[in-house]
Length: 529
Ligand SMILES: *[C@@H]1O[C@H](CO)[C@@H](O)[C@H](O)[C@H]1NC(C)=O
Ligand SMILES: *[C@@H]1O[C@H](CO)[C@@H](O)[C@H](O)[C@H]1NC(C)=O
Ligand SMILES: *[C@@H]1O[C@H](CO)[C@@H](O)[C@H](O)[C@H]1NC(C)=O
Ligand SMILES: *[C@@H]1O[C@H](CO)[C@@H](O)[C@H](O)[C@H]1NC(C)=O
Ligand SMILES: *[C@@H]1O[C@H](CO)[C@@H](O)[C@H](O)[C@H]1NC(C)=O
Ligand SMILES: *[C@@H]1O[C@H](CO)[C@@H](O)[C@H](O)[C@H]1NC(C)=O
Ligand SMILES: *[C@@H]1O[C@H](CO)[C@@H](O)[C@H](O)[C@H]1NC(C)=O
Ligand SMILES: *[C@@H]1O[C@H](CO)[C@@H](O)[C@H](O)[C@H]1NC(C)=O
Ligand SMILES: *[C@@H]1O[C@H](CO)[C@@H](O)[C@H](O)[C@H]1NC(C)=O
Ligand SMILES: *[C@@H]1O[C@H](CO)[C@@H](O)[C@H](O)[C@H]1NC(C)=O
Ligand SMILES: *[C@@H]1O[C@H](CO)[C@@H](O)[C@H](O)[C@H]1NC(C)=O
Ligand SMILES: *[C@@H]1O[C@H](CO)[C@@H](O)[C@H](O)[C@H]1NC(C)=O
View (cartoon, rainbow, N blue to C red):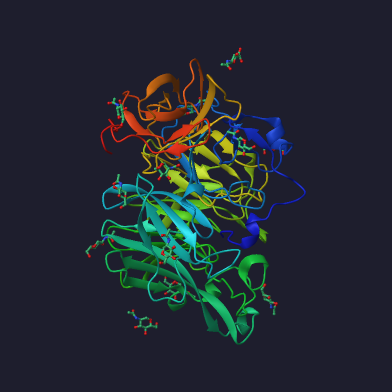
């Protein structure tokens, strides 16, 4: 289940989100948790026009808010009614903003998937809706990759289907292919399932496309392999569709795909509560879970309405057992599972279980990310939380990014990233500035290497001849630089890295509002990425 609809941008009138000035994460903030700060508290800055979610550590790490044992950034997309700035963000573990995808100005709803490796480079992956499908549960659109400069380097979708790539998954393989799902409505007799005889149902499609040519090299259609009788989602209940042309029955609901090096595909169907291993010819090798499991599911290893299934070498699978849908709850709380499976004895057993803070069920979405040290990050999907778990699955900390399950993040990932935007840094002079009392705000959306900012001044006579006025450490998305001294006509900010090298220069801005570009002799001294 993924919520895609125009209504998600509508503001709920009964519970307005409350802005806070930019802030590191809160630690067990009772007003946040109770909803007294609104369902979606958000950060604001003096001049930078971004309003990302404010984080609250509901279960704080020992060093809250720093959370220094985590290395990397959190990638997610808060969406839902009431989010001030919906869409992709990259956040520091201490809750300060690194990047807002607002800047990319995509035409259509979008979702930040996290990073992928493409042609040997780390890229950010986005899904962007093309508006062809307006459904509460799936979509049609494009997968867009941007490189470390935040420039678009790939824009790819399905080939020769009636709709584009669905939002649920994107894989870029080592063979320079893209693997994507698609939700294609087909006609069908649904009378034996309680629907219309001349009805419509959704085919769950997995397509692998050669990136160089854009042509499909593999297309798997659920209806060719999985009969609707194998599945659990009834026609016409909440988001499943009533089987009409306007609302086809989503009998399968494909929500994750993995392509393995041996050419097999692991496909997760939420509505059949089953994982399918499919061979390169498209035939099902085995089913795990559901009505017709090829495996015996030992104590505690069963799952339902699951998300984000991933194989890890031989015999190990991680999956988020939502254990509940919008119309049914099978277990008291959702669980991030690490499972062991044996293809000889055909048995699945539970290795470890991750429980959410407050033991809630997530009726849709979510993910389990296994880290290299055995710990894991769980994104709780429909519940606006993510948490870290130790190797036994025990919870270490839990962060929340909203105070209502109206607000969700499809998946949350902890990943490394180096960003140096091709667009130069931004600056703004405070309106209170006058004469030799100047306050300047500096920010550079997506730049990960900046540790300090310098403020330069120049005169009317020599606008490109700069004097260094002050240097300030960067500790948040926006940095405030104040200067008191003799008067300058123009100001400029310079982003510096930890080695004291120049990353880039902003334009010059005058107290009178004039702007002009950096001087030709202002050169970047940091080595290229
Ligand atoms: C956790 O649950 C308790 C009891 O239901 C509630 O009082 C508290 O607000 C919840 N905390 C959060 C962060 O949701
Ligand atoms: C990112 O892509 C743009 C557009 O192709 C290119 O100009 C730029 O050099 C790339 N950046 C890096 C760091 O490779
Ligand atoms: C991706 O390609 C589609 C089709 O050409 C286009 O409509 C869309 O604007 C592109 N998106 C980006 C971000 O380039
Ligand atoms: C496109 O799809 C149609 C209908 O399914 C099929 O007849 C045709 O061969 C396909 N073309 C390509 C290039 O795959
Ligand atoms: C089926 O659902 C669509 C979309 O929600 C609605 O417009 C239509 O009236 C429904 N049809 C029936 C027969 O319930
Ligand atoms: C890459 O291509 C080779 C040769 O066709 C194939 O054996 C392998 O399974 C493919 N790997 C992936 C991840 O697609
Ligand atoms: C159950 O799975 C087996 C393979 O494990 C398959 O041959 C059979 O068709 C399936 N039965 C149903 C009713 O889907
Ligand atoms: C300065 O004032 C203008 C007009 O009132 C306002 O739009 C702008 O946001 C202010 N800028 C800052 C940095 O406060
Ligand atoms: C700068 O500000 C200080 C204190 O706010 C004030 O005393 C001083 O007169 C100001 N200087 C100028 C040049 O405006
Ligand atoms: C850079 O160029 C400007 C004029 O183009 C000049 O005034 C300035 O002195 C130069 N700076 C340096 C460090 O050479
Ligand atoms: C937040 O974390 C980032 C990354 O570790 C760090 O650069 C920044 O100084 C921290 N900010 C505060 C206010 O602690
Ligand atoms: C910076 O200055 C250049 C050259 O005048 C101009 O093209 C560009 O739009 C300016 N950028 C910003 C962010 O003002």
